[in-house]
Structures are given as structure tokens and as C-alpha cells.
Amino acid sequence: MQRLIDNTSDVLPTVKKILGRDCPHYQRILEAAVQEVPPVWLRSEYLDFFWHCATTIPNWLPTVLLACARTEGNGSHGLLKMWAGVRNHEKAEVGLLRHAKDESGHARLFIKLASLCFPRSYSPGTIEQSEQSIVPIERDSIAKSCDVIQLNMLIDYMMQLNIVEMRTLHHLKIMAPMYYELCPTENREKVRRILESLERDESRHIAYTAEIIDEWYEKENDDIGRLTDVFICRLVGYNQHTLDHCDDAKNDYGQGRYLSLFAH
Image (tube, rainbow, N blue to C red):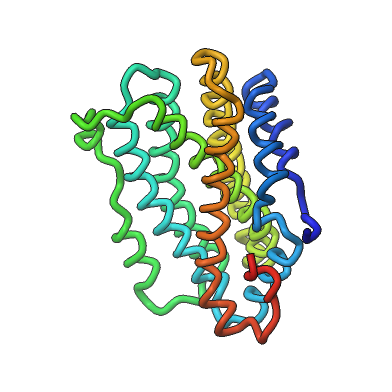
């Protein structure tokens, strides 16, 4: 097994700090799942691949920022759609709606980072076009749907969100020092505040989904083995999704390296 550059157990103190308590059932599920299926984004070679792309592919870092803006903008509407289908679970409804609004705001923050970090890296009008492409969450769009999400599906979605947010936070921690160091000196304080705000939000998203998973087991008396199996299944899927997104860069710029990273 490849050496990991970090450990998902680092997530647990963050969750405890935000919630003010441990989540022992979530902890059991998380630890068992990552033991069975280590997240690919925690492999040391994955960090090496990121660094290789950042230092080899022309304009890769500026391009990633605008791609993040699109992803967050689209994700906000996916979360709003999920919220619209949730019934009889106040904590999930509150968390999802706030999460959706956060992601909408993040889309604009990533565009702001792009303009602050790389003011000379984009063609004229690119930043403005990116801003115009972001569809904000309007008050009229916040309405419940007739398509109700069953509670057993909701817990599945919470696990998927938990995994995605852990991956997003890890990516942010990899990229943030690069953005900070490369931005013009006069913009560094603004960039620092934005990056810290993004990290706080992503940590909070991990915490609220962890709490819902933890309480589900406690209240519904679900089988811990079944829940762990679901988490493992989703982790396998997101591992593959992560590698698929790196495939073009690996083929075009990998120079025959990183074969073991993409072999799983």
C-alpha cells in the first residue's frame, strides 16, 4: 500500500471542535472504510502528481481556480435540489440549505481568487464571463419538491457529501499555499482571508454530515456493518471519479510517471 501523506483521523478532531462532541458511530464507520479503501487523494504520489501538474502544465493553476468556481456553482444547485426533497429531518434540511448557499458563494470566491492571484494570466473578458456564468440561488428557487427523498437514501447522500467534502478540503490544503505564494504581494492578505474562509466552510460541511450519519445509527438502530459497506462503496466510486478527472493530465503531461497511482 502506498504511503499516505495524511490520515483521515485528522478529520475527527475538526468535527469534535465544530460540534462540541465526539461522533463515535461515524468514527467507527470512517475508520473501517478508509482501512478497507484508502482514499487515493491521501497518497503521497497524488500530492506529487498535483505538484507535477502545477509546475509543468501551462496556466494549470489559474485554470483550476475557474474550474473550481464552475464546480461549486453547479454543486450549489444540486444541493438545493436535494434539500427540496428532504422531509422530516430538520438537521439535514438546515445543513443542506446552508451548504447550498455556501457553495454558491464559493463560486464567486474562487473567481475572486483567480483575479487576485493571477491578474495577468487570463484573456480579456475571461473573468467577467466566468462571473456571468454563475447562476446564483434566488429566493424564488428555494421551494420544496414533490419528489421526496426517503430517509434511507438521505443517509446515503450524507455519506457521499461527507466524502466529497473531505476530498475538497484536502485539495484546498494542497493548493492554498501555492495560490498564496504566487499571488502579488499586495493581494496576499485578501487571498489569505478567502482561503481561510473556504477552509472553515468545508470543515463545517464535513461536521454536519458526520453528525447526521452518527445520529442516524443511534436513532434508527441501523446495522453498523451495513452503513460501513455503503460508505466503502461510495469511497470506491469517488476514488475512481477522482482518478478519472486526472486522466487527461496524466496522459498529456505525466511523462510515463504515476502509473501505480492510476493502476487502482
